[in-house]
Structure formats: C-alpha cells, structure tokens
Length: 276
Image 1 (cartoon, rainbow, N blue to C red):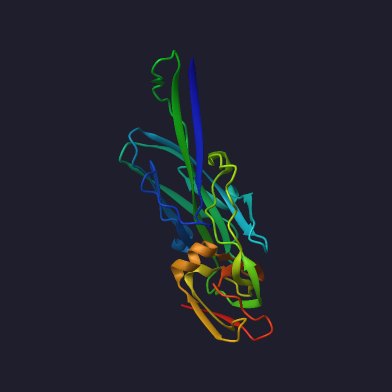
Image 2 (cartoon, rainbow, N blue to C red; image 1 turned 180 degrees about the vertical axis):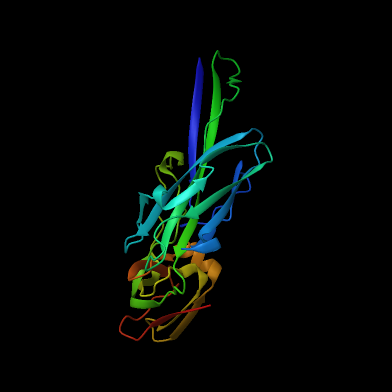
C-alpha cells in the first residue's frame, strides 16, 4: 500500500512576517513598487531553490483590496502584466528571475496593489517504507509565496488621517495559519483573554497607498484613574500588531486594534499620530 500526503503552505506578506530559513523556495524582493511608464514599470523577482531537488513553479497575479475590517479581497489580474517566464524549473541551488511588466493603463489616477503568486509544483518523490508494515508513504510540502507589487502613477502621495479613536477591549494578535495545517487543539485550550486597548479607524485621502507599519504610532490619552498616558509603538511592534497595514488610496479605510496595557478614559481627549 502506498500513501501520498501533500501539504500546502501559504506565506503571506500582508499579515505576519514569516521566517523562510527552513523553506526550499526563496522569493526576493517581497515588495516592489512600479511606475506606470518607462523603465520603472518593470519588476524583477528572483525565485531561488535551496532545496535538495529541482523545483518547478508557476506564477499568477491577483489584484488585492481590503474592506474596512481588513478582510483581503483578491481578483485575477494577469491581463495587467506580462510575466516572463510564467513558469519554470529551478535547479538545486539555482535561481530564476521572473520579469513582471505593467501593461495596464498608463494614466491610473491612484496606486493599485497586486500579489505575484509563486507556487511550487509537485515532483515525483521516492516513497519511504514504513517499518513493520507493507505500506510506504511519500510526503510533499508545497509552498506558495506572495510578493507584493504596487503600481503608482508619478507624483502619487498618501494622506492618512485618523477617522475615529476609542478605547476597547481587544484580543492579542495571533499568527494566521492555514486551517488545513493546524494540529488538533487540546479540548481544554483556552482562548486568549481580551485586554485594554484602542480601536482606531484610519483613512487615506491620497493617491498613493500607505503601509501603516512604516510609521511609529504615538498615542496620548488619560487613564481611567486620571493619569496622563503616552505610548509610542515602534515599527516592529506595529508590524506584529497589524502586519504590513496596507491602506488603499482614494478614501481607503482600515480598522485596527492595538493593546494599551491600561484602561483609558473615553470621556477625556485622546490622539494618535504617525511619525517616520
């Protein structure tokens, strides 16, 4: 009896930052910004194979948008680009450069964001005998990595403002894991406890996207027991809390929650500002 198990894993750039040290596939850079015309309309994405066998792969492109709650919406967008080669075979320790060229409208009014999917394809593997049985098993672990590509018109700039800011009990961030890969949780596993925090709604009135993890967040308020409160969230902490924090242009809105560690007085003034 021969059994083949195939596991899939998706590494998302927009969400959590995942370590790729143990992966057979490397993709670099993970973020590219293109212009709509000229030499800047081309990205070169390198796919590397650090595994022990040749690695076939294929690519596709999707346009990405987020609703206000942060839910990712993807739609096929291969027609906006020429991708060459669209698939390939990378030898052991080898590299393949994938050229991605914008061929969409040269006069887009605002920046647009896309994912370049690089999906590892299955290869034949030698089944391993299970000791003491007549069975053998072969396991494929196939990775899909998504590189962010943003196309922006010349002169585009973000313009981010805080729409609302209010104290709220929030849940600590947890890594996003493909449900198919989750191990069974113990029956007595307890969900994380809510903690004091803030709910902030931000909007981008500009013509260029904003990455909220690229700024430090500074909060000033008053605690529930009347003490002054100020806290600065550095880039690394913001990344852990909100991921990249992609904020679309032209009125794009996102809602984020962040812990404060102490209850704040909703009746007192509070501010949030972003500094670089």
